[in-house]
Amino acid sequence: MIQSTKRRVGIQLAAAVGGLSLLGLLVWNIGVSEIVAHLRPIGWLAPLLLVPYMAIALCDAKGWACAIPSSKYAQQVPLWRLSLARMAGEAVNNLTPTANLGGEPIKVYLLRVHGLTIDTGMASVVAAKTTLVVSQVVFILLGLPCFLYRLGWVRQGWWVLGPLLVLAYGFVMLLIRWQRRGLMEMMVRRLRRLLPHWQRLAQWEERARQIDVHLLGFYDGNTRGFIASTVYHLLGWLLGAVEVLFFFHLMGVPVALIDALIIETMVQPLTVAALVIPGALGVQEAGGVFLCRLLGLDDGAGLTLMTLKRAREMVYDLIGLTVLVRVSGVLFPQKVHSL
Image 1 (cartoon, rainbow, N blue to C red):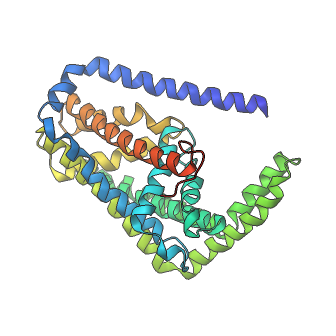
Image 2 (image 1 turned 180 degrees about the horizontal axis):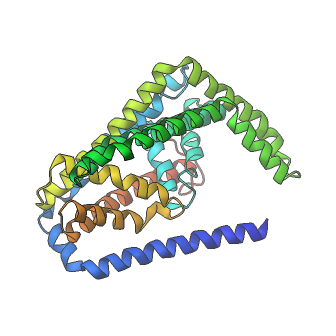
Image 3 (image 1 turned 180 degrees about the vertical axis):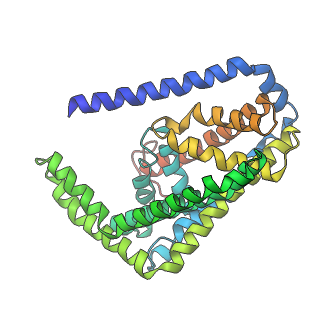
């Protein structure tokens, strides 16, 4: 177990160093002066860079709200509190190599004061994560035909898009089927086989069973909630393309909306593939530069765009961590503050 942990930490550290090296290589080749030249037109308008993500965060929070089981407690949670709790969880996801899963329990923890129990909270987080993934798949499939069109591969595109549609449908159905068949309880049972002497896992198994019950009820009895959650998350992804267009506008770089959509959609698979690297550092930037080059934009504009997105992400991660620290009472050990 110790050797396995050391190996995993070593892989994660190597991946982080590799991502940082890739980012450094990009900056070295393109030049800091190119980034500065594209940043200069923004000037005092820089705070506006944070505005688009506010709408995105609200859409994602609303998507999570649609996955929370209806109760007299859950209905009282304001949307802005859900947004802050989600922001704190996403900060942990972005800053740690946990495959975007490490921050999910944090979201439930931050809403415990609103009567959201661990089993219902974790069920809502898993369901919301599922609808987020489903909407991301739909979002990528929306941008793929546009990308193929811009590359001049319209006729050949169907040979690519057709199999991907089948694979996407099969992936979504398999993901939901696993959850309906008791995925959480199954995972805890496997942990018990690996760690037979860990007594706490016996308590977790019962809780996992309750989470599976809530998930089954969500997928079987709340179809409207599933669709609504997916639609809200999809709207958040689409607003991400608007954010790209807005960033380019502030930089003074003329870009068509379809190109902004292509950049935002096609960078998603690269980011997902680099889950082992915290925040997909380096990979996201390299993907953005490559896509901008394919669309006829200069490398400096692509790297500046990704730099601005990274800066915006860091600001909101800092806000999320501040919320987490304040609520957990780290700064105020005598008293635990609520949101």
